[in-house]
Image (cartoon, rainbow, N blue to C red; front, side, top):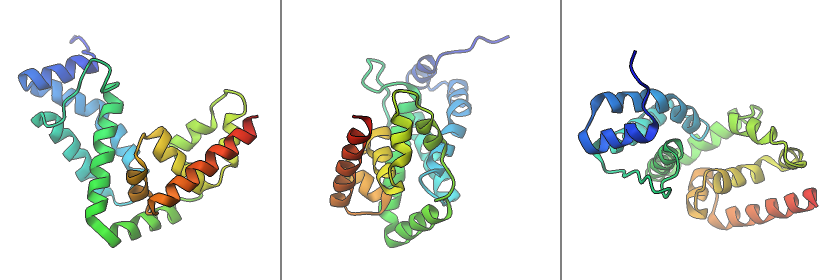
Length: 183
């Protein structure tokens, strides 16, 4: 029976020794999760698969550096930041075709609650869940991109296919509505 290594131990083994088994274990642990999260952001499974591969390639090659001093956060969050930024880079390069694909994805899935929406709706601190549910989908999407995913205004704008000024306005409106609902 083999001992289970922590995420940090796996990352150290990959970075320091190029440990293939550690890399494979890291991939098995996180690739399905990262794929599911990225599919919530991009309707094209081919692009998502490429981004997941590029994310783990960056880990293997050492171009993405994990810092255990708390700066990088946990392994999942660190991989999400790499993957989401790579997705944004791909979508930026895709231009109008990427924006159209994203718009179609939003239309196709607008009635389906994402896993993140379901988690946010299940928060039991005050009436935060109710306040979040009452926000329009556009305001919730901006909050998710900027607060939950930690994207910059510009990155959120690219991801959502809207101008940066609109991201700022929607974020301000969402915060105002949440303050009023929770007051």
